Amino acid sequence: MVTPVEPVDWKLAERVAKRVGGHEPFLDSYHYRNLAPELTDLTAEAEGLVAAETGIRSMSGAGRARVTTRAGWVEVNVASFQRLLRPITHKMAERVSHSWFTPVARGVSGTELGAVLGWMSTRVLGQYDLLITEDDRPEDQDILYYVGPNVMALEHKYGFDPHQFRLWLALHETTHRAQFTGIEWLRPHFLSLVEEALDAAEPDLEHFRTVARQVIQARRKGEDPLADGGLPALLATPEQKAVLDRIGGMMSLLEGHGDITMDRAGAARIPDARRFARVLRHRRNSATGLAKLVQRIIGIEAKLNQYAAGEAFIETVEVHAGPDFLNRVWESADRLPTMTEIRSPQKWIDRISSIPTPAA
Image 1 (tube, rainbow, N blue to C red):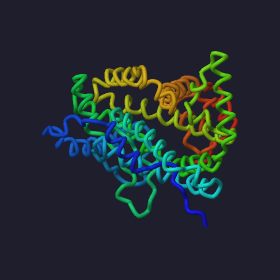
Image 2 (tube, rainbow, N blue to C red):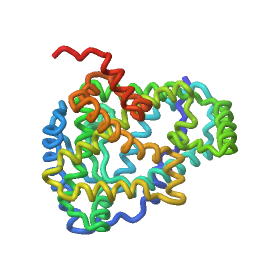
Image 3 (cartoon, rainbow, N blue to C red):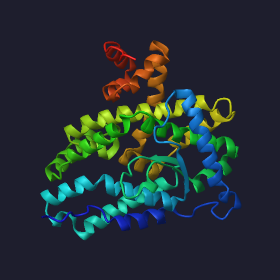
Image 4 (cartoon, rainbow, N blue to C red):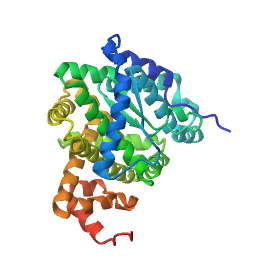
């Protein structure tokens, strides 16, 4: 039996990420101590508002809010990455020699991943984590995380009303939880797509060489090889690209639905919602220099575009076919839009119109 070889030095990645995350503002403030109980209450309020707006209710009971630090967020995501990549780790152990992952190579990949996670830890405000699926750690599953230092720093920088802003954030994260725990088939479908993408991964050096040649040719033509998903999409095999198209369509829908729901569900309680949205949209798009390059390489820039694309898809479908027609997207996995349909909503409308509505 071949012993699995970890492609990343995970401990190093975690140490680097925490170092890059740097100083955590407001941890010593007495206001920080009040953050957890307030976000617990606001999360419960947000879940009720989301259910009233969307008609989608979690089948897993009430959500649990957890305020964490940047370092805590790093630990959660390193654990998720380890579990997510476990299948490909075993595949690599079976198909390539241990020399492929020398201590130097593992250290380089650990440093690179740590740098990315550390930078992201300074930006993320909230996260619904559905990738932690270990049965022996139920206390760490189905959690709504809020990165407290980042939330408070943003409130301070822009003079946000804390209560309004925190409810606004809670609405977005609880919408995602409602999607994955209130639509019975969605979570297993998403995880099956991730597994399918990883199963298609091949430790093939010739494929990497082919990709490198394609990048050089694209640059010579004045094209941007990183525009459509960054390095992950660039390195994907044809089989993986087909799966990534389905994942991208689904995530665009979910992110757009999250943004639209947070605005509509909180309309009566959050007068400053438009300002929050404007500031965060500018924040998403304001990266320059090295930060922007990192976003493009790892695909974050493409993910940020999902928000706008998903919102535009939903609004177009509602205008041309009505809100009730849009709800057909939740009927089954084959009703989800692809990225092509996200960009051309009429194609999705035409396809779904040809499918009979399920009997009540």
